[in-house]
Image (cartoon, rainbow, N blue to C red; front, side):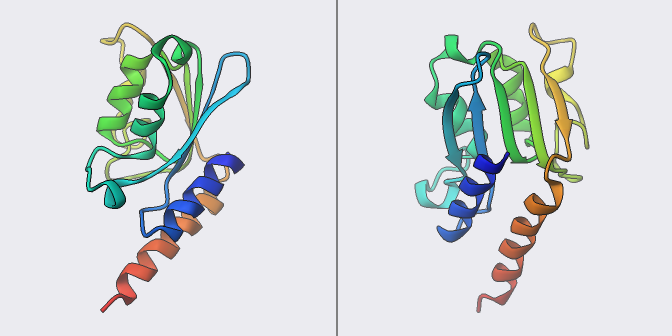
Length: 142
């Protein structure tokens, strides 16, 4: 999660919502590190989780673990559910849009072929602090 937090900090410095993501293989190897790039790419789907899933060959996703600083939204949780990732560990809960436990549990839905366990709250205070800083900066903008 510390690697994901460092990517979230990078996103904040670039004017993005500070979400960082790290994919780790079933063997424990870091596969990729990403952060939100929605604004810089002008792409609403450029969430850290989506960029991570896109950057790794599909066969390498099987059994991988995703560490992400904010609970995945419906789009990202759906991609996780179809990817073969075995576990999502997230920091801050998203009580409005979170689909790995807060609002819904898409990756754990038995309708999907693969089951992906979801756990939240790892380093939650640190993850929330970055998000609060982002929204404080946005409120201060003229």
